[in-house]
Length: 200
View: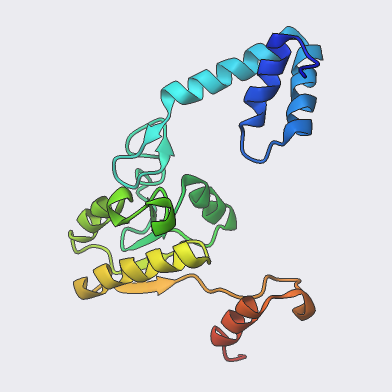
């Protein structure tokens, strides 16, 4: 049974399709938009439409951008001998927030997942190999997610890149800062032990 007028029900339904938005949150957002001044909904709709129309993939790295090449690839101050490979554009933003990497990025747009029908040919791997063929890149950092799909993707890429004479590294895995050992799972603890470093 539907308790709302059709336009309200449709708005709740559409909002509920967004990731991380459950039925109650969708309802809350819908009523917020309905009770807010008209320009709030209009500005939101305009921002979504502008983003959809203006954003595309960088022809070099595959990141989301409104200019080509993107602002990272176009920044002459960045190191050209190091490429960090990530799964999604949002991973680039996470790495940039950490402010520890000054090289370039390459976005795969996913990870190898046979269960979901995603193989290497569905990923942005061909462009990566093309970028590596120039001889300028000395290190590729594989920053895929620490899960089965991310590990499989990193292993596959490592097998392709190592024969090119390029150093291949992987982000360290282990315990997050501030974590308690009693709450860590066995896999995380095992990786933290394997990745241990000498105290200086």
